[in-house]
Image (tube, rainbow, N blue to C red):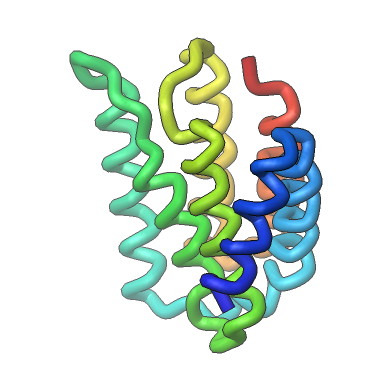
Length: 152
């Protein structure tokens, strides 16, 4: 699924960046729609891995030099949905993250405060997942996905 969706996204992005925004809306709806099913299937090991990704991201953001925790960002989102065993959902999400990189959103474009805010939402999501408060995690996910449209 990923190659087919990815190739379509590449064609759309070649036409213009505005298509990435539409792709982001699509991805946000997929993540929201499958949130509860996905988080209920996560194992204790998955939750530990989410916490480790969160710790690595904060270490990069607070380190010298500061690093963009893009790999952690991508892996955190994909990890949440990987137990669905649904190649359509995972394929779309993987293709989205490839497109995210292709348009250059994986590099620092100014706005350290923006990055910190993104990771505060990720922290809320991970804490909620680990505590079994999936509704709070869902609310953090929804608020987090709106941030992309406010990126500096």
